[in-house]
Length: 188
Image 1: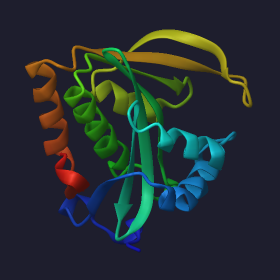
Image 2: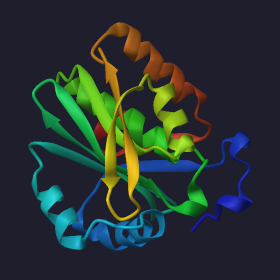
Image 3: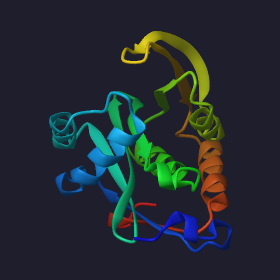
């Protein structure tokens, strides 16, 4: 596997493949999950989420064949809800999350979604900064949402993702990401 410390990310050496998340990826997903969350999702929960293909999209990010991140959304009406997004700690700050979120926004647009929402830990300023680049704005607070740490969640929304203006934002974000993103099955 490519070591992120050996890369000059600015030189564009990293190639990230976004693939539909499958059961075969779950061992790597569970490893990342246990590293980044104090109360990780369980294997049965991931398996049940992956089985809901008509109302969910889950994507894995791979570098040199290894899963380095994953993300998902669920659809309800004209909204999508980011259910999870996580990046291997060694690959954080290398735009893996931005690649996955851009992909999920595009897939949401293809499904005629107009609005996206998510919850993020109040103390996770890095993730909040990434979400703000995508147009997400704070809309409320869920007290003690993360029960294991008694931490509040900031509820964030981005509206009108179905517009040309939002597509321009996505194109600008994607153009700013160094390296190459390859999306399996023809999606950007």
